[in-house]
Amino acid sequence: MSLVVQDARLRILAARIVAQQRWPYASSVLYSLKPVEVSHEELSTMGVDSGWRLYYSPKFVLEHPVEVIATALIHECLHCLFDHMSRFAGFSSRNKNANIFNICGDAHINKVIDDDGMPWGGFNPVRFESLTKYEVSSSKSTEANHELIQKFLKENQEEFDQNQDCGSAASGGNRDYELETDDSGNPATGEDSKDIIRDAVALDVEKHAKGQGKVPGELSRWAESRTRPSVDWRKRLATGVRGSLAKTNGLRDYSYKRPSRKQDAISSYDASIVLPSLSPSGNPSVGFLVDTSGSVSQEELSLFANELLGVLNAIGFGGKISVIGCDTRPSDVFFVKKAKDIPNLPLKGGGGTDLRPGLEKMRDEPRPSITVIATDGLTPWHELAPDPNSDYIGLITEESAISRVPRWIKPILIEGDKVD
Image (tube, rainbow, N blue to C red; front, side, top):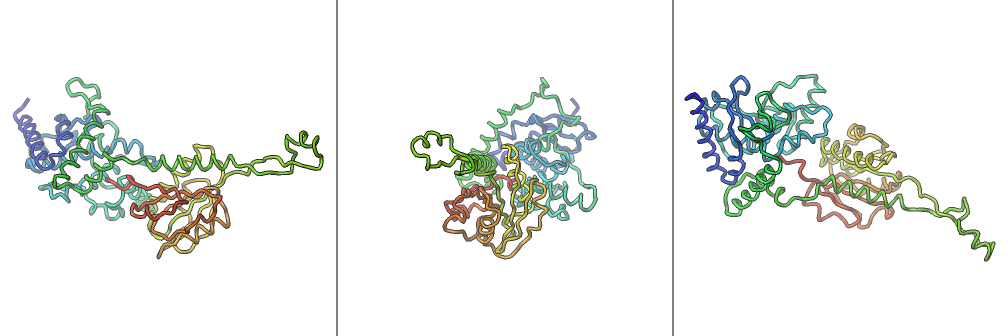
């Protein structure tokens, strides 16, 4: 091993100590990354693979002070903690792009680092300020920002002009410089071990914060979601929709169109008595009420629509969904069968928020057996359900509004999609 490489490796080790001094609660992940040297032509900075091996260019490491390398180390650690690789793999976008996802993840991570005042030296990292033309925002998730950039590129027929490679830990896919998973010299970290490390860091973050230590807000929220996880809102939506439609499918109406199977028995007693038979009540129907006052973004609407249609398709629902938008006045009723059609409907509104007229119109016109409401929850509500024969599910994006939701609505807090 050359002196240059030895020097670079020592700088990596020194930078890890500096990073640990800044964020002592990140020790578990910092010391789990196994340093692996690669050529500058293969990787010009640093990156982490799916097995949490840390690849670095000696040239890059030697060009920057140890304090800056420590910042870069923390950046790579956050890709691992935020599990960007698995999130990209599970991302349902048809046109997902690993480079764009990497850039969006970098922007979120670098904001956390900037907010904590860490030095970058002469190195110029990805920031939201360099992505302003795409209308991305730190308040949106990496997935949502990815969609905004893709939408801009499609509408403006442009190519994405930024490139970043933080390794497969940032967006999946194997790089040419990355080792095999079963490499004997540098074995990959297994999925179970990753979860153990994430849990350890989350607990250390909370312990540090309780001791009056300084912790970035984004990291604190991540730790809380890790140590006190809530049931995935998607699972709650699926459970609610399945339960409501199963109940609706079980309803029956009495009809005299055909005789009851018990008619022969009753006729022997009194032929003047005619019993009705049980008949199906008809196919269940689904309504989707969208808060158009500005509290539900187009990205969220697309997400909710896809999840709702996904649940309905999975349980064999073949009908149409009646969609109404409402701020203080309801829109027309639109009937759709595909999730992609919902965001394109003329549902735009503005001003105040009062969903009661929309709920009343939904009751009066399509009269669905289940109504899903997408809103921040900051609206007046009816004291009683507008339609006692319908089930109501609320997709609520504002946590503070949950306590205001009436009992006739099954509230589901949407969380996790706006983080990192």
